[in-house]
Every structure is written in C-alpha cells, then in structure tokens.
Amino acid sequence: MDVKFELFPFGKTKALTMSYDDGQIYDRKLVEIFNEYGIKGTFHLNSDNFGKESFISSDEVAKLYHGHEVAVHTKTHPFMDCIPIEAVVEEILEDRKNLETLVGYPVKGMSYPYGVYNQEIVSILPSLGIEYARTIESHHDFRIPSNFLTWAPTCHHDDNLLELGRKFLEYDYKGKLKLMYVWGHSFEFERKNNWHLIESFCKLMAGKDDIWYATNIEIVRYIKALKSLQFSVSRDIVYNPSAISVWISVNGRPVEIKSGEIVNLQK
Image 1: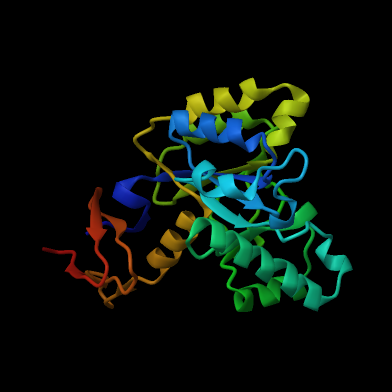
Image 2: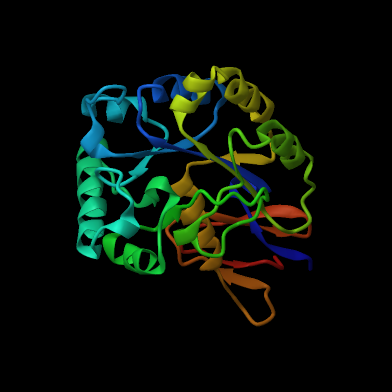
C-alpha cells in the first residue's frame, strides 16, 4: 500500500495564498481583482489608522474583506524591537480586539511591521493568541514553513512574480506539498502604476484544478490538522482528532479523513 501522508483539501497538491499589509484604500481595487479570479488573501491592518488619509475606514472592513482574512499588523505600526515588551503586547492585543469587533471572528494571525522581530517577540505570540506571523524574508521557494511564527514568504510581488508563478504551475507532485506565498502593499501598485502585474498573475494562477486558493489562517489550520493525524504502527489505520477534514493519498487516490474519524486504509 502506497500512502503519502499529506494532500491539501480535495486532493489538491499545491496552495496559493496572498498577504497584504497596512489597509490603505488601494486594497479596494486589489480585493476586486482577487475576487474576479478566485484568489484568496489575508490583509494585515493597523486599526489606529482607520479613517486617516489614504486608509480605509473601520465601517468598510467587514464588507471589503469578506471571503478573505483580516489579521494583525499591530495597532500603530511601530518598530517592535524598539519599544518595551509591554508595549508590544498592547500593540498586538489592542489591534486584535479592534479588528475582532469589526469582523466578528477570532483574529489569529499577523505580519511584523517593517518585517522587524526578535526571539523575545516571537516567544510571546502564542500567549497573545497569535498562531502565525509573516516576515518579509523571501526564500523564492514553495516550501511549507517549519515555524509559522516566523513564516517567510515565497516572494514580494515585485520580485520575479510571474516567473515564479510559472515555475509553481509546472511543479509535479512527488509526495511533497508546495505552497506559493506572495506579499506586498496595495499602494505599491498605485505608486508604480503596475496594476497589470497583479492582474496578470491572478489570471495566470486562476482556476487550476491542483491549486487550493486559501487565506493564511486556512493554510495554518490545515497543516496543523494534517500533523495531528494519528497512525497505527503498520500505518494502515488513521485517526483524525482535529475539527476539520484532511486528505491523504492512498495508492495514488485522495482519501478524505473526516473530523473525529478512524479509517482503515486497507478497506
């Protein structure tokens, strides 16, 4: 019996997720493009900036980002390694609280303002309810992170985006999942007058049968659920203790392991 222990939902072998910071008014156009092509994104917001010049207002957050994810970018966007740890705690918790009031769900992810962090900051994130935090240290690869609290992206959108996208599409599944993670700021498209770049990328990536289009938190929760699977010694019986379905490959076909289900893979 040939068992490969991980697939994305519905047997897909690749995932694409997008990550955009700051919550400026240009997110409106970016979300419109994502929605047109079925691309999912996470938007990291500074709640203290709502309503200021060039920033979205608080009353449009829920509707604008519906179908995507809203996440922490701290309340005021400080250099977190230059403020007391008590202030770091306040920046994160207050931003979470403000955003949760607007969107009506637990906000569990973040991106580091200016990409700045240190080990002390990373170590306190779980106690603040943060499950993942994105850096700006691109690796130009399609790997699943070993530590979601220092989650490095594939690339910034100005960094060979289309070339990397085509490489991602050409990847053949060999038992290892691949993830493309793109980050940036929507105002950069306006500033550089290159909205055509993200439109071309979304058009290139859209509608692929082997790609799961997901938000950052959906990726995190799914990978955690996969890793929680419990196998028998012979690896022919599997139990899923998580709250969501996960998929594995058995003899070349995708098998769904539902929440709370015990499955004998030989039947």
